Image (cartoon, rainbow, N blue to C red; front, side, top):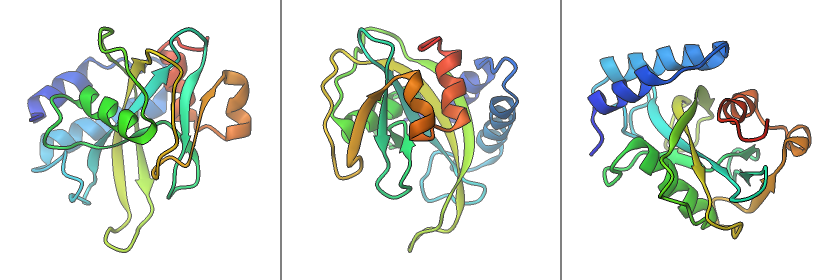
Length: 183
């Protein structure tokens, strides 16, 4: 089970550099974890909850794994909610990537927190509008094999030249640059 203390340590060591959005998101995440009773619960809507995303790099080419989100209808990195069974925040990101794209990850390479992004999630029938305090973890694939799933009806390996066409958000682009993946 992930503790608030572990999350605070992880968040405190993150270096956003000149990325003002990541710096503000870091502050918001630290506030959430320090002052919330259930920061990892998907059922905490005020002020939101921690989520984890996988920035998966291709094993041999300058490419990043992207998926077209089934509900948000946008190209995003795979990711989602923290589960009680997750050993760490990076493990939550890895689990989500595997569930959504069937990717095989190279677990011998330690994950790195490459970005933080707090963003709004539209309401749906059982959930009000709320914030995802998203931690973006850089991981590496062992092969280029990926598959579509119900949650990811389209998946692709994207190069930097694809980002405008796919309308990749600045927070994702900044995380990719911070991780030094497609420089």
